[in-house]
Amino acid sequence: MRNKHIIALDLDGTVLTNDKKIAPQTKAMIKKLIDEDHIVVIATGRSNRMSIFYYHELELVTPLINSNGAYVHHPQDKSWGKYHTPLNHKTAIEIVEACYELNSKNIIAAVHDSIYLDQFDQTIVNFYESQDDGFIVGRIKEKLLENPTLMMLYPDEKNLDKLTNHLNDLHAEAIDHWNWGAPHHIIEVMNKQMNKAEALKKIANEYGIPKERIIAFGDGANDMEMIDYAGIGVAMGNAIDELKTIAKYITDTNEEYGVANFLANYFELSHPIKS
Image (cartoon, rainbow, N blue to C red; front, side):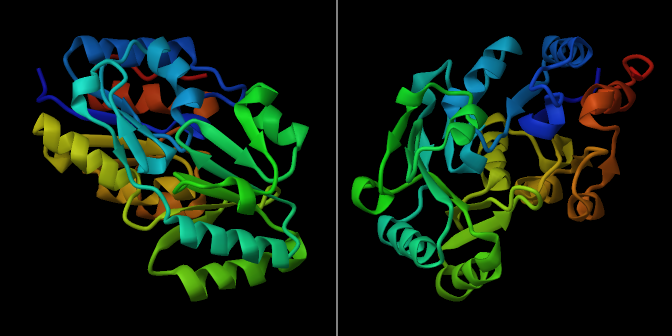
């Protein structure tokens, strides 16, 4: 039997299909590896509320990385602790003011599972797969009184470069940010001290697993540090080009069971599952 590995899974665009499901083939492969005593963890940009369903579906008993690493906890073991690395409130409000000045379409600030939404938008509510009562709606500058876990900015496209330059020029030492790209152009912002890689390092230290035995899968800009850090960093076939450039391996797309195929090959469990 191989040495114990950590297997870190991004959700959207990685372990989830485009209809936000975990394919039976993927689920079976993950369960097989858990049964062989490997450590499977979810590392997602989603909040706990938006990811815990998948955690339970995979029958995990491990820590959970939420909000791109800004919140790390263990749903099954409260004694493990909770690690929250939010944005500074003053910095967050300065970013909100810049968004107002540049006519941004909307702003979200998340504090754990609470979501502050500057202006009500049913499309955003639907995206978060939430009921309306899951949001605190109204001007974030007045309503946000805590340090936010992360923020999501919906810029006016004409001012996208101005907002990006503002974040780079005035807040580079305190925040990291990335653009989801077309067609959304949503800018995600979080504390510079934390990302998925930093959260994964903490979990690896807890389990005593060296980085050469960490397998990490991802597809987007928020996976860059994690894929670069992992000894076995795997970009999905549908990943952005920048991630494919730094990944050690590229697997099939999320619609082609890329996670299951790679794990089957790597652990020599069976022939890969092709769509």
